[in-house]
Length: 115
Length: 111
Image (cartoon, rainbow over all chains, first blue to last red; front, side, top):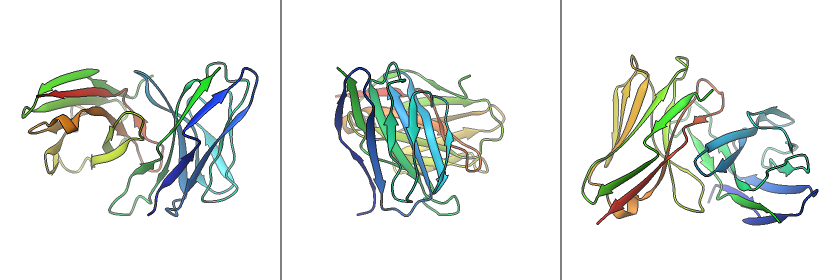
């Protein structure tokens, strides 16, 4: 089945530590996205990539970094510069706009907690 | 600046009733308006979407109504069921720009 796989499902980070969240898709989509979800805040865009080896900052990119070396993979690193990283992180990919089933497919998310 | 405003924040509906969630947008360049459904601990799933060339789209019990002049669109869930209890997000985008999401509505359908 085609889809998006996020791992791990739960992640705990110590103060001052960098952690990396994995996102893999087998949908052959060019565009991929990272969103952060906090209670009552909706989904806020962290980074996105329209094509391999290219990515753009979203609305809340500070304290985060990404890479897009392969079409299938778009990992997100939460750095120690992110002062409030506890949240639910969602990765998504987008089908081409010309397709009948145009839209975003989301992974099941990673819940990150600072301990 | 919040580009998509969603209301209400929470909604309680009796089983069999109609659930209505509203969204308003500011950017007139938006040309794609989806609704997503999210269950606890899961990622959002696309429910239904509309483009501004139509005023209404229906899929089963779910209907989007779109008012271009008022810059508003809404989700109607007919014959609401307990299994519809979830958080619903409206969103909007233009061209290939990333989706901008509303803050969500937590729907509870009670028997």
